[in-house]
Each structure stands twice: as structure tokens, then as C-alpha cells.
Length: 311
Image (cartoon, rainbow, N blue to C red; front, side, top):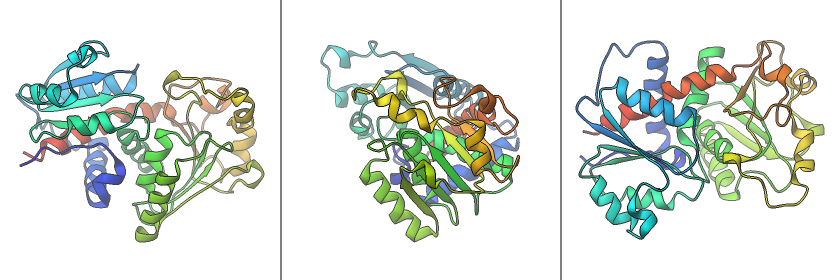
């Protein structure tokens, strides 16, 4: 059987997304039972960008599932000296069963790695998507609220890769709703937004986007933000921070949109305190940001188990 890849939430489709979530919900509830589907296998991590949660969670998950692990940094593979990605992938697929890749560039390089048939390739963050983050997001929401159906997520800030994957996932789950409120010029990519809207029409969900802080929805279930400097990179536009400052999540904003204490706050971390969120919210009673960080491991376990099931 061909190797399973997870490069995009849009590409795997609703059936595979539900399968991944089913695995993740079971793992979050402690239903793994010590199963080690990667026993005797090898998992590589190729991280060209910094990572705390994703790299650690995938390494720990691989070990918990029985695999050996090897890590490659940005200068470790001969790609940096001129070898083609296809040749590198052909070689690595003779050693590894799974390769987990993080970059802040397009998914095109990952797609080249995934052209071979024997080594699963997992997107641990690209410029356009962060699919394993969306799995962790949805596990955290379900664990806290007890449901996904009917949940309304308000996302405030930049329409980055985290926002893209969550929007694409939300759109494929029945009766979910996601409202993105972003600075002008920093919303979701038009193609991603279009795909999310198409999915929503098919699955009875809704993804919408606008830029008006004076038109925030009320009584939402989740308020979500991410840091404005994705992967630590500043933006090219002079004065961009001024555009973003009104989108900081404060107690006032939380009170304006919340149902009450039952509304939760999520952040994928790392957070730049006092920038996209203030301490009173990040450390407050509605925050589940650090529970979300814990579920990065749940997500990694689920994704690796799903890839192993292709054998």
C-alpha cells in the first residue's frame, strides 16, 4: 500500500479528517492501551525553522509508538549543497518510514518529498498550512466544551497558516462556524478562503472573514489568536504593527464576545505577551492555551498512528 501523507487539511478530505479526529479523541481520553504501531520503524524530523512544541511532540510521540528517531536541522541534508529534493527523498525513503518537515516556505518541497511511495511525509508547518495544529485545536475544543457541532470560533489577528488549517478543518465538520477578523491586507489567502467556503456549503458549516472590530460576533464559544510574527518573522510593510495593535485580545474584547466563563481562549503558542494577547487573558480562567500545547502530543500520536495504518 502506498504511504499516507499529511500535507494539507484541504487535500486529505472530510473522511480522513474525521478518522484523524476519531483517533485523537480516543487518545485524549486515554484509550491507546499501550499500542505501538511504529515498533521497529524509523521517524525522521527535518526542521528548517525553530520549534518547541511541534518538534518535541512528534519526537516524543514517535518514541511512545515504538519508533526510533533521527533529527535533521536546516544545514544537515545535502539539499543545502545542491542535491535535488527528489534524490534526497529517494535516499531517505530507504531508511525512514516517516519524515516530518517544518519550513516557512511553500508546501512544494514537501510535495516533492512525497512523490515516493514508501515514506510518509507530514507537514509540521509550511507557509500556507499547519495541519497538525488544527487537529490539536479541535481536540482541545471538544475536550473542553464536550462537542464540536454548533461551536462558533472567533479568530482575531493574521490569517496565517494556523488560521488556514483551522478554517479548512472547521469547514469540513457539520454545523461548525468560524469568523475571522483580521487587519486589512492580512486575511486568509483567497484560495484558502474560497476552499473553506466551498467545503462549508457541502458540509453545513460556515467560514466567514471581515476586518471590522466594531462588528465582532457575540456569544462565541472560542476566541483564538496567534502571534503576529509567524515563525518569528517581521512583516515587510512599514507600520504594520499599528494595523495589528487594535486586534490584541484583552479582557474587554473577551467580555464583548463571550457567553461568559464557558467561552474559552486559545493560542497556539509561542505568545508574545502584550502584543497579540495580554497576560490577564493568556493566564486567565478562560484560557486553555497550555492545554492546547499539551494536545500537540495528542495530535502527533494520532497523525503518526494514521500514517502507520496505511501499511
